[in-house]
Length: 256
Image (cartoon, rainbow, N blue to C red):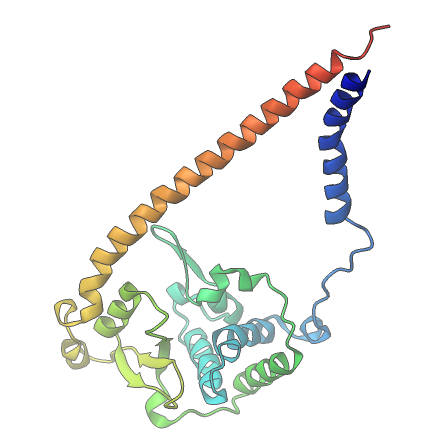
C-alpha cells in the first residue's frame, strides 16, 4: 500500500509543479509594466528619435552635446533621403534593418533587447524627448565642421570590421567633446577626398577584422548549434520520460 501511494505521488508531482509554475508566471494579480505616459502622447518620429537619443547617448552616459549630435545625425540621414538609410522617414531611419549575411541595424540597440525594454528613468527620458523635439524644430545648430556629419562610432565598443569601413570610406571629423566616446564622420564630397582616404592595408582594424571575425565567430557558431541540439535532445528525452511515467502510473489504477 505504501509503495502504491509513493508511485501515485511521484506521478502527480510534475502536474502539480507545472500548475504552480503556470500560476506564478501568469498570475492575474501580477501588475503589468506600464509605459511612461509621455510616450503615448508623442508622435511616431519624436518617439523614435527620442529612443535613439536615449539608448545611443544618454543611457551610455554621453554628454548632452553628443546626444544632440546623435539626434542631428539621425535627422540628417532622413534629410538626405537615401534608401539604404531608410528614406526620408525618421522612424524608418531609426529602425532600418538590412540583411546580407545576417540582420544588421544602423543603430545597434534596435537589434538588441533594448528595443523591447521599457524606459524607466523618467528624468533622462524627458531629456531625450526634449533633445528630439529641439532637433525636429531646428533649434540645435552644430559647429560648422560637424554640419555634414552622417555617421558616428564608438571605436572601443565597435567591431573591427565596422571601424575599418568607417576609416576607409568616410571622412573623419572628430569628437564634439573630449570626454565623449562618439567620433563623427561625414561622406566624401569629391574625388580628391575619396583619394585621400586610407587603404585597408593601412588601417590596423582592417587587418584584424577578417582573421579575428572568422576564427572567433565560427567556433561560437558551432558551439551555439551544439547547445541548441543538446537542449532539444534533453527536452525530447524528458517528454518521453514523462509519457512513460504517466503510462506506468496509469497501469496501477484498477480497471472497472
